[in-house]
Amino acid sequence: MLTHLKLENFKIWRSTGPVRLAPITLLLGTNSSGKSSLIQSLLLIRQTIKGDDPSVDLNLGNPDSDDSVTLGQFKDVLCRHAAASESTSATQVGIEFRWAEQGQPESSTLFSARYNKGPAGSAELSFLRLGKDGQGFSVQRSKPGIYRLSLAVLAKSLGQSAEFRPQRSFAFSASTLNKLGLRGEAIRPIGPALLDELSRIIYLGPVRRLAQRDYVWAGRMPAHIGDDGAKAVDALIASGMARQLAKRRKHPLPAEAKLFEQTIHWLKEMKLADGLSIRALGSSARYELLIENDGQATNLKDVGVGVSQVIPVIVAALFAQPGHIVI
Image (cartoon, rainbow, N blue to C red):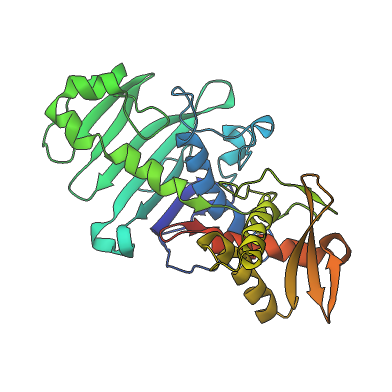
């Protein structure tokens, strides 16, 4: 889980100072006070390391690529009232966070990166420290395209080279690691560990997909529910149909049916509904999601926007597995 976050010169934040993250973390504040910026920093690094272009140091987002965040150019990310700190200059953006298994701070891994303005409004990596305390590596940009590599276990750096430029701000190419030999093997797992941690994020954006009168279901449980919750109802249909089938055959409920059962439980707890049901429309692949209240079943489209906005939140929380991060 994530245990620590620190931003410098990032959007509204001149410096957040070290923000402690716990198993449940609530961000409270007025509009435009920087809550979304904290979240966007993590999504920004996630979409960067999950990208497929090794030359991109920071993927600021493309609205045509279904990126989680679209932040414009480097000048749009750099705080308008930027100031220098011990580690970051007034022209740099700094993003730092830690994560640890079981949330143990003493065994946490650090990601700490600083970015300068690059060509055509892009962001260019200036510094990266990645790894556990006393382990891992750091790189420092010495001139365009050239980076100095240091390993935490060695007193002297390994020199500087274009090959020491991390791809997508988190990992080295296979050829670079192979050339480093045993030293490369020591740092090879660190980048994939970061990718694995940030891939655990289930992000649900502030504006969810509005309810539809019926849904086309592909016949399987979706792998994710989407940043706008568009697949939340698909997940409920998959779970609900598994539940219907088991009850019709008088079989024990399969694990897949638990999502539907638990969603009903939480809708009752929140006093939003007495139940849920799924209805197939003829022999097509289209299905209705019905909300049950006072003995009446009403199409999700007809019960008001609020319920359709809450259901993806419930599904996202239930969809998560141990170790996942729900934002």
